[in-house]
Image 1 (cartoon, one colour):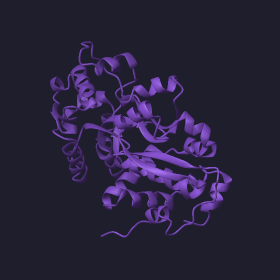
Image 2: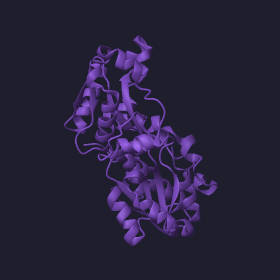
Image 3: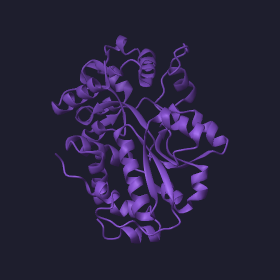
Length: 320
């Protein structure tokens, strides 16, 4: 049984006194039901409570749950890591003045890729391009590892496979039955030094643990990409994936009610490689989310200290 983390102890008041800040009251923060979302919430809640003296309530949530609650109840106050491409109602709420984007959760947004291992590209640099792969299918194992049914990336990757005629160029398209088998195939190939070619997204633990190269599919063309993700569009073509908008969102009421706390949320952002590495550490160490929060706080103090006001920084000075 793992020891309770510093984060958990601090939030229960066992290690730190509540920061003195009478101006910050009750704040509700959503916690998305995936690891990176939990980590961002944990870091945010810790800084709000221990740096600004807010009375934080963490609310278990998910994309649809969070956006519905914002629309119907104007809460939670803070929603970290909202993938707005999966929650288009966000833009309506923003237009109505109910919510506001505080910051980008990830510096490069959510990313999607067709990938090959770095050692494959080291042996043949042309394999960093789709043209090189089509000309040398055996060098990537003659197979493309695609997404399971029901995933949005399955539709786009199927369209790209058709437009590029992967099968006609000697590359079998293999549709995985689950995200676990897709990640497992990726890990197995890399750990055994085998050729591999497939889809994955970030930030994620596999991209933090293994060195893969993003295959150059050419430029991004919005019209082509939109068609590629529309099952009723027959004019498929080749376009790279756009970065997905992933925001830390707050209600307008919160931004006006707690301006100092809102300023903190405006600064909370993680590098994509940084989050992938953090997720890899979490996975490799079988850590809890609380422990991953502590690991981030201990090893990135210069970063998060710059997110804080002078008073909040003073409240946390010397803790780590």
